[in-house]
Length: 479
Image 1 (cartoon, rainbow, N blue to C red):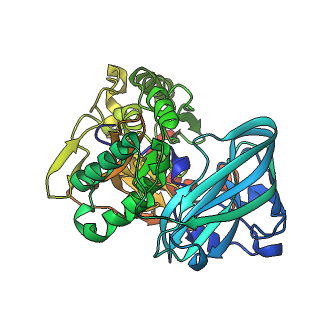
Image 2 (image 1 turned 180 degrees about the vertical axis):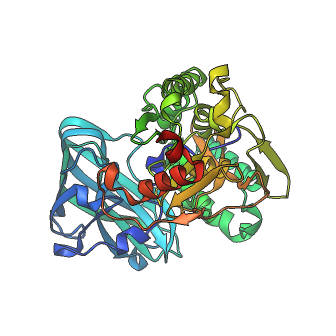
């Protein structure tokens, strides 16, 4: 996220269809998938096209794991094109910490066109049977529907019954749109045309009538939300997304619920900073987050004589400014990069930018010259990638791990008349050396990933620690 204010990594987790293909099909075409399949167990029977639907049970068997789990099945989209499909089920949860929901995605080959993942109103804790739905229109060029049940990390289980996919009648292109709904749709189209990074690549003479056609007959503003999601999908940037009013309100007021950075000492004189995703734009909460990180760095400074590890492997994005503010003692006050807009204009940025900045204490000034090893992986996404970019070109710095997710583009927020919001990709990330990104950010040293293991057996962390000790020559100084 950048500019006027991407949020929740949750909203991006199901973007790429590729993780589905790696899972092994089970009975009735269901697969257990997600970013950490080993942390979940699934029981599934039935199909969503059956009269009685499917029954799915998804359970987290390793609560400390940081990846999500999902049941998933894929259907050809041909018979659903130009129709609205609705996935519905009765849902029950037990001990769910971070959310469970139904999810539905429409793809064209390997590109996501539309997604609803239910994380705007997830089920948490213990809930009795409740009816839930996810609905999307299916564009004329869609090739597949991917759908199922989502369980976020942290523990618990979710069970669904009567899970069915039903198609409505063909979408009528001439139905009148209520004035309030039309106002929201018009605003969304105008915003995207004027500001989207890839707006010039869209065939507007074809796309705009299709988008308006999907909104035909809308009686309330929420009826045009699928059309707005379709519009954003046509950009093909895999990063722009839509946020309804409730989620928008929570995002603007959120911040205090974010976990703090994990700052601690590792054996051998190494400091460790695990930087999680950050959601929310409340300035006071963001500054408090950064200030706590500064305090933790100050307390740990004398124990990190060999340097610091900045671990971004679990950072799925959100608001980059609190993350950068917390890391400001290591990054300094100079220019860290720039946002390049679609017509060549650029905007420089620093760790002290925006209303989230916190000035480090004098005791932390020497950290600007500390040795730093940055850890990245495929779950380092969006703003997590911008934090990665912030360290590019920094002296005494090297990165380790695997390439990032490939969302190193910047989103800006644009409010709509009903309180909803578009998080629109408007810029490409550029580092302090002038290197332009936009896709995956490759580490300096690739370290192949293995199964989750204790830190002492973490190959990426071990490579980073070895480099810090060797390059900083602290090993001899400590003997």
